[in-house]
Image (cartoon, rainbow, N blue to C red; front, side, top):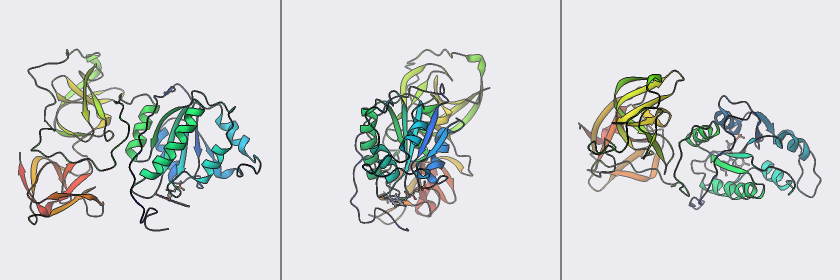
Length: 368
Ligand SMILES: Cc1cc2nc3c(=O)[nH]c(=O)nc-3n(C[C@H](O)[C@H](O)[C@H](O)COP(=O)(O)O)c2cc1C
C-alpha cells in the first residue's frame, strides 16, 4: 500500500504516559524479544536489534506459532509462554496495523490468564509504523500495554518508535540513561527553533560569578581533557533535559539542559572506556552520548545568524534535513524578516536546530 494509512484521519493529541525505572540493567541475560510482526526479519525486528545493541536476547516470532482467537482453543500459546515466562527483560515489538498493535499481539495478550506470573519483569515496547505521525497508534498501544503491565505487576519502561526513543530505551536497559523529570507526555509538534532575540538559549549555562557547585572531579586522573571549540546541541528527548555534571563522571549539579538547545563547547574529556563528556561552561559537563558536537557529516560549522529574506508577510519552509527531500514541517514556516541562530551549513541549507534546516536561497547569513 502506498501513501498514508492515516489519510483523511483527524489528528489526535498524545495521551499522558507514565513509565517505571528498570529493575534489570545489564545484570540479566534473560532477555526475550517477542516479535508480533508477520516478518521475522522486518522493520520491527530491526528496531529490536537497535534496542538491545550488544546485549544477548532470544527472539520469539509470534507468526511462527498458531494461536487461535480466544474461544477457539489455546493452540501454541503455551509454547510461546514457556519461552517468555522466565525472562527478566521482555521487549515486545509490534508493527502498526490500522493505528494499533498487530492482531498477533492482541490475540496473544487475550490468552493471558490471571495466574500467568510476570511480576517485576521489565517491559519495553517497540511500535513500528510507516506513517510519520504515530500518535494514535502509540495512544492505543500504550493504553492496552499499560493496563497489562499494571495487571501483571510489570515495570513498563517505555515505548520506542523513533531512533532517538530506541536509543533512550537502550540506555535505560544498560542503566546509563540520565534521570529525567516526570513529564506526562511528549509534545506532538516539532520543537520550535530558538529565536536569538529571546534569551532562552544562552551560550554559557550559568553566571560565572555564582559558582553553584564545587569543582572536584571524582576521578581526575582517568580523563584526558583536550580543547574543543565549537557548538553542540543536546540530543535527548523532546520535553526532557540532560544532566549537567561538575566534572566528567563527576557529581550532578542539579542543572539540566533541555533537548534541542545549543551550547558553546570549550573542552572534551575522554576516558579509556570510550566515554566522553563536553564542557559547556566552568565545571559544567554533559555526557557526550546526548550531545551532538558540530556534525561529522560534511556540515560546515558556523556560529552565526540567518535572516529570512523572502516575500513580506510570507514564510519559507522549515526542513527536517539539509535537502528538499527530507520533508518539511507542515505547521511551521519561518517568517520573512525573522532571525535565527545557525550552527552550520550543508548542501546549501542552514541548520537552525536539531532536524531543523532552512534553504540558503532565502536567507542572509552573518557571523555573530
Ligand atoms: C495490514 C497492515 C496495516 C497497516 N496499518 C498501518 C497504519 O495504520 N499506520 C502505519 O503507519 N503503518 C501501517 N502499516 C505499515 C506497517 O506498520 C509498516 O510497514 C511496518 O514497518 C511493518 O513492520 P515489519 O517490517 O516488521 O512487518 C500497515 C501494514 C499492514 C500490513
